[in-house]
Length: 369
Image 1 (cartoon, helix red, strand yellow):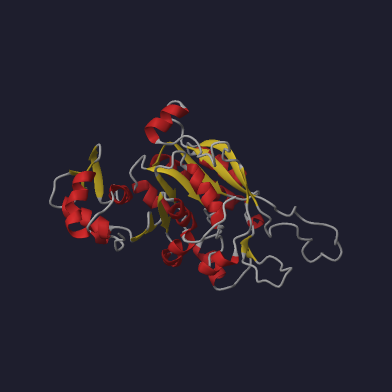
Image 2 (tube, one colour):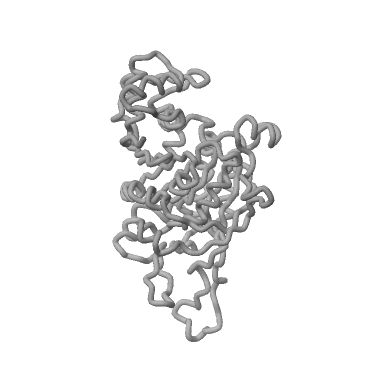
């Protein structure tokens, strides 16, 4: 049964306003009288999502309202449940600060590579079609209109320092919200991956390498600007043919086997019994059929996202979080696989995009590798 957005949360608030505390099973039985059958996993996801903003955990599987006056639904960040996914309209740093510690089992996200890239000023320029500075249009070789890409070579020392501070803080908050052994997979690019990795490791996460998305992009390979005829045989940078996704991990609680038993995390889910998940994933650019569903400048293909998302929960159990949800491609991949997920997006336009796109992207039939 599909429930309206916020219906489960509001029902739990209503019940706990009358009960001093309750277990998930007790909550499930109580709200079934007017919502019908609700899976315990849905109730648990709603509780985790709104703790400690609305609910507080007072024992193993026991919850209560934090405060009656602070627990009204109007105080809650707007959120929409779509299948097993929930997308929240909020700032991810603030959301992570308020999230229940050790409530997330994996993170898969494609953040802005720097605060400059998606600042209000640069984002407004992008949406208005005023391309320049941070944003550029790659050259067209086939008559197809190209999507704008960020130009990372314009970042100066101050921008890089700000970027580092941002990712150190992000790493600390992810460490707080995740369980031991949680995989943290962060999209980056060849110019900045080392800076992002070092900053998040300084935030307390373990650096575990990279997953390479093997895809030819439009970055690099250009001749010198305003001198392309004079230096026809010269490329300023190598043509990029891969995209690095940084792999980090919340430090283990004991050995890998101990962590798997206690937290259901600590490794990667194998593709098959005789085939482990590898650190190179062949990928095509995002297909037109997916770009037609949602117009987002950083939309990643579902084939790649499903491969990554499936792998990050070694036992196929837990909650996957995307703190920079954008158009919802991570959440769509999680829905397609059958995982629970939560995404946070602060931009109102992208939040609306995701509400429409998640179910459509997750319904796409993707040929497995």
